[in-house]
Length: 216
Figure 1 (spheres, one colour):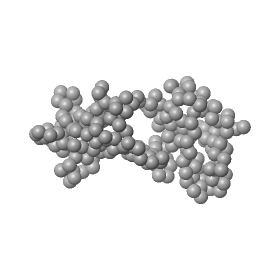
Figure 2 (spheres, helix red, strand yellow; figure 1 turned 135 degrees about the vertical axis):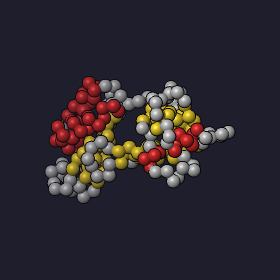
Figure 3 (cartoon, helix red, strand yellow; figure 1 turned 180 degrees about the vertical axis):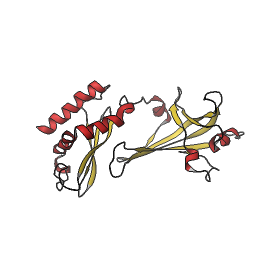
Figure 4 (cartoon, helix red, strand yellow; figure 1 turned 60 degrees about the horizontal axis):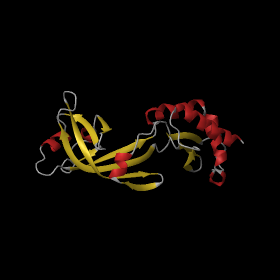
């Protein structure tokens, strides 16, 4: 959702872009209907472009309690980019000034240079289907990862078989797998791969390494 000073009365859905992507210079390009409040605000700006905040909420693509995995905020100057969208749509350009990521491990700032240099994770496009496949077809193997936790394991939840407990994969990227264990307590654990994976083939090998280590 895009937050712009002076548009506090606009409805949440009016401030949600139809799509977004990162431009060649690291700017965030947001596509809105041409008549939306955000486009009007950017179009009517005079000397100084409005400062806006893009709030992004990361939601787990699997059914699990507390599905929000993290939040991010990107602030910067907002301008209109004419002629770069389909008819009836307008592209707004958010030049990144500051950014923060807030997740299970705390809040951390991201410098604009880091934002521009960041590369998309090779698994991002397929993460939802991969997590759903792991949960549906490899539940036993995912539950076995509890053996790698040692003292961090919730002793009251026996490998996800006790009523009211579950073990659900909630996040996946090139560096590892994040699993949520629920029982008397609820906690997430991160299982790092031996090295970052670059594609699905390397992911399969890394997952087998994790499962084999848990089975020992």
